[in-house]
Image (cartoon, rainbow, N blue to C red; front, side, top):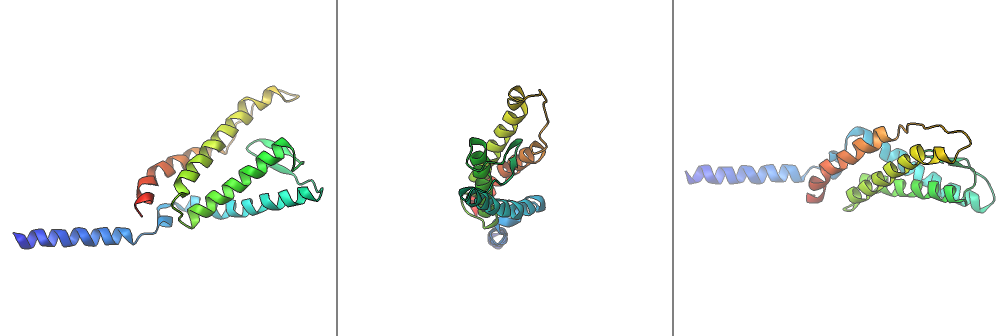
Length: 157
């Protein structure tokens, strides 16, 4: 009887050790891993656009339905800030930082709100009233759901 209990305890320890050997990155599905690389590159481009704007070069900036070619306009700073936040979020997820899930959730909430604004508010200020469905929501919402799902396991590691 005691041997069975001891064997069960040993098996539980082995299972816990096996589980602890899994990297945080392994909790991410392949589509999020691909987007991590994409948005790390996007973050670098956002910084580059900021630098180009300092030299008077007007880069074409667009994200979440916001568009401009002025790096130092309100929309330009917004787009560049989004790019930098997305780059930092992607970096923190890829390199398994403790704060990565919280940052990813904040990033997705910001994205959902900005998509909502670009879909439902900006058309009222445009020359022609035209509501456009933002396809980014098709990725932001599952991304947020996945971050909520893996958050507890991420924080255990």
